[in-house]
Length: 328
Ligand code: TXA
Ligand code: MG
Image (tube, rainbow, N blue to C red; front, side):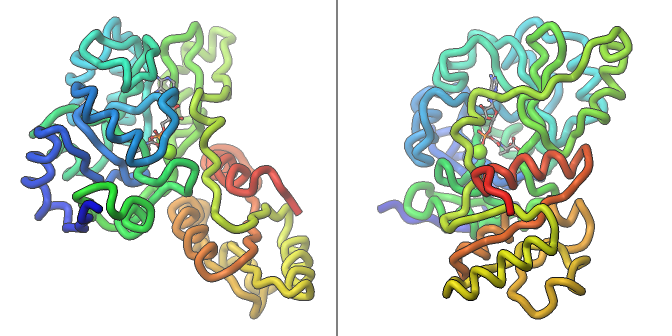
């Protein structure tokens, strides 16, 4: 088995550049989740991503760039509105789907004629890209597991499968980027994220004013992404129903955990809690780490559901996948 090393991002940068240039894999930090990167222009290197993750070949990858102008290498017929979006959200948690250039191998796009492009908001990630190549990169988890937000999460999933993990500390955003398709008649959100429909509407406002709607549809990969902990997980519609479910589980001999924010301590009291922090942003940043901790220490997970639009809704999209749609 291959040795896997975790190295501080700045210190590992030179080695990462040479691994990518020689067709290998490197895990790198981004503001959303950790990415498993390979040279996007090298089909053999990209194939290795699918093998390391156990990812189905028909699920396309995002190409990460270090500079807005680099989009010209990756995509063709880039619409003006892309640059408008870039001004506001790049670098950042927005991925945009565009018509693909011939330079991008089919294995990156799963044979499709579009390509997803993102500029990560992480200096080391961008430096790695600038010094090597645009990077094709999915989240650095084993296929179907929870996305990683620390280097240790990546190590837990991919030890022996990648040579180098660049450690940039915990991810600040905590869920994967918003995926926006600009190749349809109306800009379409394929995956909700921290860049919300309302934020996009500020840039695409014209489109909305003309009576067109930003649609929420499913991206091809969504059917594969369960974001699921390895133990049974349910989403709780209220703190009361969570506590009832918890107490019932204890009576049945289970060892449950409440994955909740601290604002409910009055009700949750001395039951086992994996804290999501206090605010909605805390919840988003902490959710994946909390699910991973809970699956290690407990055999049943009860997760807080949040009301509301925007970020809360994006986070609930992931939580409902983790719970396989089960609510209490
Ligand atoms: O935040 C993120 O986006 C992270 C970091 C590492 O950048 N990456 C990530 O990649 O979440 P991945 O592969 O786990 O998810 C990419 C999503 C999938 O749902 C995939 O189907 C969709 O983007 N996607 C990729 N290329 C596409 C394309 N050409 N058209 C439509 N959807 C695409
Ligand atoms: Mg993923």
